[in-house]
Picture 1 (cartoon, rainbow, N blue to C red):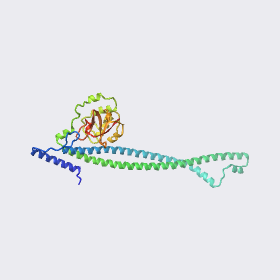
Picture 2: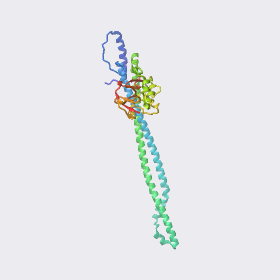
Picture 3: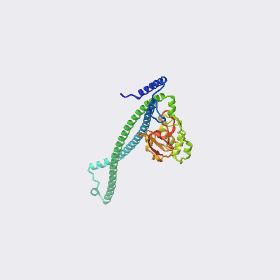
Picture 4: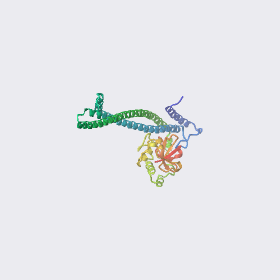
Length: 353
């Protein structure tokens, strides 16, 4: 039977208490092989549990950002489709108004034809009493014929326009309905992800509380790798948006990790990248996956400080390349924004904006 995360956290806390009691009574404890985690040389069960829960919450967070991007796009499609509906309805109204204007003339022509009237030159000759009257009648017939032909042509065109406009309005209404249905599906998915994330956040917080003070300090680690000098890195940068974004991002070192955070009080991974580039006038997509789809691809050997670097096969983590194989990022709860070796994470790729 599968064990829920909340049950695992309760057991984790209980086991930690038991472990402390045993440590007080046992002088020699057998050593076991620990699982390495980013930020640790070795990891306790509590640290491993926290790392797993944090990864899950980060994946959900970036997935949630993607769902929001998708929802925004679907909502815009719905608005665009509705605008087309309104335009099409206006065209239908205009075509119908034109038909209404031409209808009396068409009714008159139809009525005259029905009564057997003849509007041709032979008829004019037969009913004329004098040459002048004949000329007058023939001229009048020419005008009547031309006006009638024009009215008939306009009526046919108005009828065609009305049919076309009606078809366009129906098609636009169908598109608007489909867009609304798609937006509803994405909205429901977004709400489900939000609920899932809230549960995961609670589990991460509980797992973090289960760490000892020394483990929490070890998790936070140092803000900069040994030998890393931001001033030296910045002095050697070629002017550009990426370099400026890195410079802005470095000012946020020490800020806490916050799920969904876009600064300035706290950040998640993609939120930090968005904030840093926003300071130099560039708007990047909100999720790590969307950021991976923009900009220009960069090979790892050609990385420059300021490039956006992406991690994990599902591209669920992102940061800003800080030079010398390091990344500036907001990594996980309990770890402030920091510069860290990229070797701590599975590299996926990079983009230059």
